[in-house]
Figure 1 (cartoon, rainbow, N blue to C red):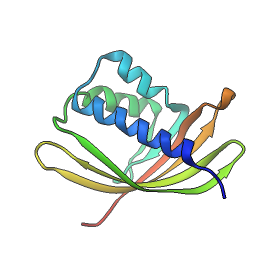
Figure 2: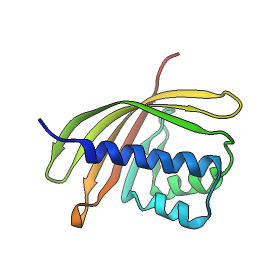
Figure 3: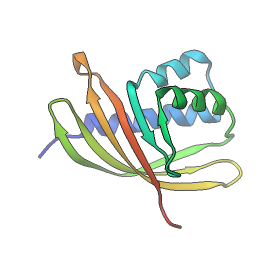
Length: 132
């Protein structure tokens, strides 16, 4: 059985930072620390099938900082899909809610890469909305 805990911990920590950034940005250092978690070759498919690269994700984060008062993320259903020498693929469920009560629910699959010194970075993320 593979141990995915380091990857699950990364999902949890990254979402904690995203939650903080969207609810109340802590300055450029906080955003820079968040963005270092992503590979320079990062790609993402959003729930609406939009394709993002790291530059687009960076612009999205810069624009959205502090714009979602009361923003909360709840993670569940973390599962390991595959683990290998250069990284792993995991899935999870993510529920988001803000102070207005706007709620989204999605399932996500992330491909992680290990960089030198075993640092884990987000290489690809695919999100799909869950039906209500």
